[in-house]
Picture: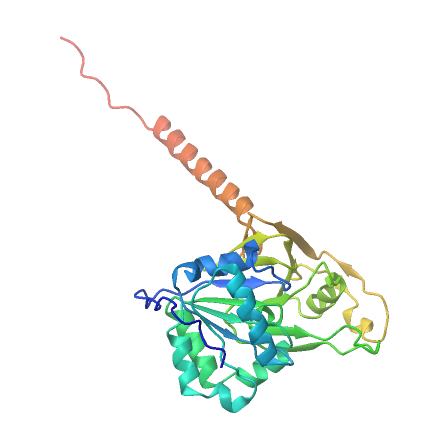
Length: 312
């Protein structure tokens, strides 16, 4: 286990039991960047809030834990612990689950999201993360850690280190982010738009979210605000009228029509339930409210006025 530094301030236990927030980072986050900063702020990490990190997704969880301890120290976090969970039996450790239950913020590092879910999914650690989130903790994932927080995870569909094309993998994730959303990370930097298009064409009910590096989608309820250096691309295939996604498996180029694609930059909010920018939805609500008020005024104007008594 990578312990906290000596002399750190004891964590304050949460007293509320409202659902927590999700900070979904597209990878390569800078220690003092706005994306990781959103997680530190929401978990009160700069003022003694306790962070517990999980580096299971990494090929070398112990070394990854050491690197993240350095990054959190540079960022100003004062109470960080990263237990080494490198196999299934450690995901069942009651002591680690207790640490998760006492955390203000829980951090999932990058690597392989399939391995992360296979190792932790359904374990005592998994249940502790879910309970902590339900009780108000902030859950942050970067790269594979973010991808694993959805109901459906995406992996593969790209050339491996030997240039061989990997098959696309879709499987169950931890499910903390609903709305039938699926996350793709390092999005612009690794040119993953085509991959996400193909997957959504084959699974049009899903909402594809492509998150750039050093960029976070901060989710509270059904709203996700973008912070950081890049943007978040959303892909909605429910209106697709034609696609040849099945033929693409044999090497044919993708053909699609009526696919909805949007880009959300820093400072803007995506309504995950409606799959649309909140600023547009708010404008529609304001317009509808204005129309309703106008109808009331027209009705009142048309009502007959009470007659006045005749003067004697």
